[in-house]
Image (cartoon, rainbow over all chains, first blue to last red; front, side):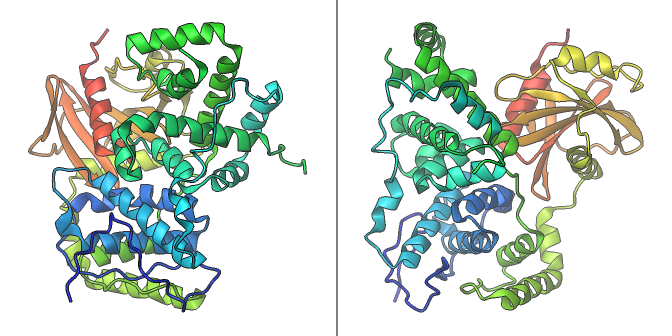
Length: 208
Length: 261
């Protein structure tokens, strides 16, 4: 039985029921393929930072990274040497995360995860009134607020904000997210608008 | 230009990434739209929050070791997650396997040049010191005079930072046997250290691989950090960071090609 395994394409693997329902588990990928480019490890910290924000905890982030590199090794042969290694690795990470998330939810129909919160947001003609108070809330946000606000965004929103922060170019972002390059600016801008809005919902420390 | 169009371009405008035509159109819109000016201000605060207050984690050492070993072909891929103790055991196995695969791993990293190793160590020392910036930047014109009398040479650095690589400040560092002027730039989340030092009598790496302007630099990667090292006249330069290699080259090129005053 041979199967071409492309980790950058979402799998529709059957749900594995012998997983803890609470945790997100990452399945073993088929491990064949050649050596990865030597600089694949250079992206470990950045991948970890993003994985940590996507999963929300250390253990799942570590599993996601292991799975990402396992998939990358398995399909190293499909990586074209002159293309963008960083974008390729993050695309694998994103897809591994989506696969795991779907398995954990035992609900393959939850495809909406991939393009969730960004479509329904219209830019309001007037920012809602909160005025200086809103600005002060963002200014006063501490790490925990920022992480919680990020976590409240959907996967695409979080991903585009985090990767932009890692210094990704628009074409790399389009590559990782699988969207047209012309839509990257507006996706990023909408995701940030949503994040600002969520941050304004947090009171400064000490408040309830 | 309407508000929606303008808002999509605000971030690029602040980063200096807009062409003159778009820039003028956004500026014109902002001049007449209170709501978008407020959004721009809030979004600038959001950038600050993300860049300065979001935790900057690094991959745990055990995970790095396990993945290094996996890439070196020493470890089969790990199965699904096991609870607590088993996880620690897996990490230990990873470390043990790494030790067994030591030769392989070391070979992959290439023998680091002593200057590269020192540059990376200096970068970490600057990063982890309690006060990384001994002088905070209001631009290169504040940082440059601060070094006078503190180092025994005149560092030549004309690039005072831009939106992509804002200059944060400076500090004194030691590079092998001599003093160095450390300039600290930033790229989004990442700190970048530029060390400037006297170039004489150092074990320069043999084959420069990157060329910008009139200088040729050696590029190396060590422990996840990229380093660019070059020599210009009597001075040596080492640029170190965990940013993407292309970003580092882009900054290196700006530094090497900024005309001295």
